[in-house]
Image (cartoon, rainbow, N blue to C red):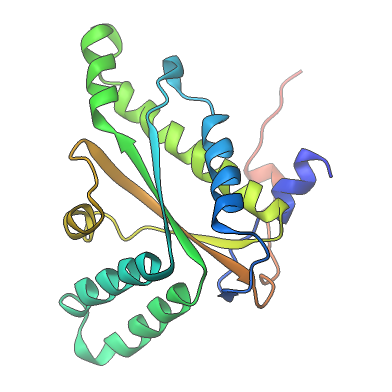
Length: 197
């Protein structure tokens, strides 16, 4: 399969389950390698990942649910809770972090670029997330990227003993593909791209 085919295979899969054929160790190997091979500015390697399986996976989504219960109007909470159920139905969750100590160190080492390092850090985590998501799709594991940070950051950090310098950026929930993604539509190329010769 070509790289472009792999990118096309990567979709937001919302109907996920626990019926994956890979072990946690096999999934970790894919996740870790995808992140390790993802580029970062100045080879900073600022991306961090915490993968939650079993009770830890469920605990994370209960933290999200209970945090949202305090924020979402009561009449709308049932729909929110059902959405959380769909994520909890998955097999695992990868929490993507960026190590702020690395970014601060680069800012001190290269003050001329100090304002850019937080931006470049966001590039790094985006690339790591995309690479991981695509690598999982290649082995027929479905996933969707979620963003419940920063509202859950503090409790998640306490629960899973996350270093204080790690900043949560996204959550990739994954599992078996129980229903395919819907049709993907694209805007007209002329609205997105320009080429000059």
